[in-house]
Length: 157
Image (cartoon, rainbow, N blue to C red; front, side, top):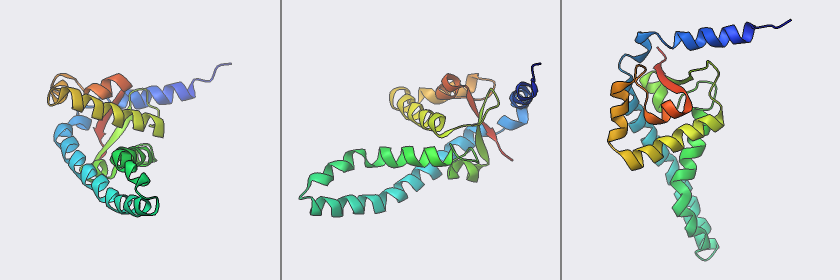
């Protein structure tokens, strides 16, 4: 016999994402959370940059090549452990009262979180500021990378 308890639970969570109250003020809150997260990544990069500097001295300058990948690596690890964690939100998103939700009702794992971040940066790099216009025309105020990954950023409170 087939047990569809998991399916019904996922469907119930997915249909909960249709409530308009979940999207009130999401665009503004997303921009605010971006600024907070960007500042936190920059703060985390300071001790890492000092470490790379020291490693560069010890390695006669060889380690200084790590500066090229320092910020992207820190940002990816930051996103994987925060958005891909139990709260499904980065610290900036938590300050803004937001979280990421999958449209199928499942949780966001670290891999999806990293994809979400990488696609965000790729779309912003290529389509700025047009990437923000997508949110004006989608019911759930999703950006391009949200549509591609089947996610939505919703209010958590």
